[in-house]
Image (cartoon, rainbow, N blue to C red; front, side, top):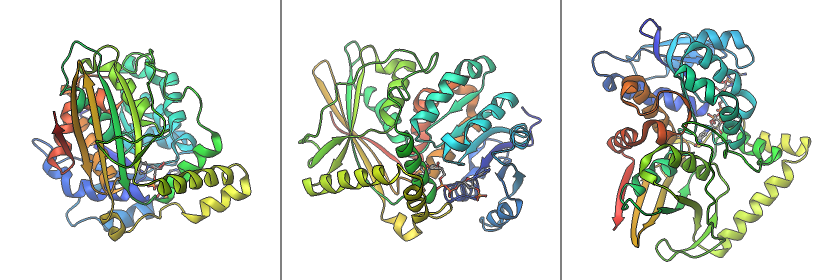
Amino acid sequence: MADRAYDLVIYGATGFTGQLVAEYLARHAGTRSAEEPLRWALAGRSREKLRRVADALPEGADVGLIEADAGDGRSLEAMAAQARVLVTTVGPYAQLGEPLVKACLAAGTDYLDITGEPAFVDQLIERYDAEARDAGVLIINCCGFDSIPADLGTLFTVQQLPDGAPKSVRAYVKTRGKPSGGTWASLIGALADGIPKKAGSRGSGAGGTKRSGPKRKNMHREPLVGGWSLPMPVIDPLVVKRSSRAHPAYGEGFRYAQYLRLGSLAQVASLMGGIAGLFALSQTAPTRRWLLSRRPSGAGPSEEERAKGFFALTFIGESAGKQVVTRVSGGDPGYDETSKMLSESALLVASARDTLPIKGGVVTPAAAMGEALIERLQAVGIQFEVVSS
Ligand SMILES: NC(=O)c1ccc[n+]([C@@H]2O[C@H](COP(=O)([O-])OP(=O)(O)OC[C@H]3O[C@@H](n4cnc5c(N)ncnc54)[C@H](OP(=O)(O)O)[C@@H]3O)[C@@H](O)[C@H]2O)c1
């Protein structure tokens, strides 16, 4: 590994999120490694575009450039062989992601992404988990807003509860933020494909095979958070359940459910109407093309728009008659905080891999990086707090 040219490579550095990751690393990478500055590179399918991204980085950023196309397996292998850790923001992952995972496994390179696509993660668990464990390669999905706040927030919550009795956690999510072209394309793709019934539920080893049935409520009012709360059919609960099987803090019989918190019934109706409309329009090719053209690749919320964004997840944890309320919160969820979460995860793996509890497999953020990542995120402004106990 020491002979690799780079500690960290960011694949997709020309995209909206990839550029934010590059900027974050340009500001923070140098101060993060113990003895020497991190050796890192930007990667993508166009050297010219990569050069423009590198030129726009804060002065003094010393980055390499690597050309690789998601459709060209050889270029992916050559890129993976130059890196100890590879992070990718090239999506939609269901369309473009798998060949890179293969290339990382072949090269023995740790891999991190920010997918929120359950079908993609399910496919990786099924096809590559055993191989990754045998090879000692970490494949860590969902290192962005999907699913780090939910995954690490739940770990933080169960650690506040007494052991020895089944623990349950309900998470209530409140966010404000606008999607980028890449997120929009992933959403439309997922709606067009439909969510597989068992998505994210399989896996072995670090991922586990058992599925604990969630006792999910329908739309309800939770006095501790106010407003109306709706079940969220996102990847987070699937990730949290996999983490619960890999870390002792959750104990036996752990349950988790996640809800979106909205202020009024009018907001609930407007959200339902919006999703129904998107679902209908994503079913035929011409309407899908029209939807995709509304937010092209590379576009995303401006700095001013992102400055108005926020997220707050309130967790209500219960065990043996004790209740604890915790909160994880931060700024713009999709981009400013996602690029921070992905960068800090990658820096942790690049600088302290030996200290991590799991050495290989298709794994979740909490299982792979747990408390060490909570500490890093707290140090850079993402809050984990106990609200009441
Ligand atoms: N989980 C989360 O919280 C979260 C948050 C944000 C984003 N995301 C996900 O992250 C992904 C990226 O989002 P984004 O908004 O940054 O997307 P984007 O702006 O469209 O960027 C996509 C990137 O992929 C690259 N790419 C596309 N096709 C390629 C190919 N064949 N070979 C190599 N590179 C290729 C693009 O390169 P070019 O510049 O050359 O076109 C670009 O760098 C999406 O899947 C999105 O859903 C997740």
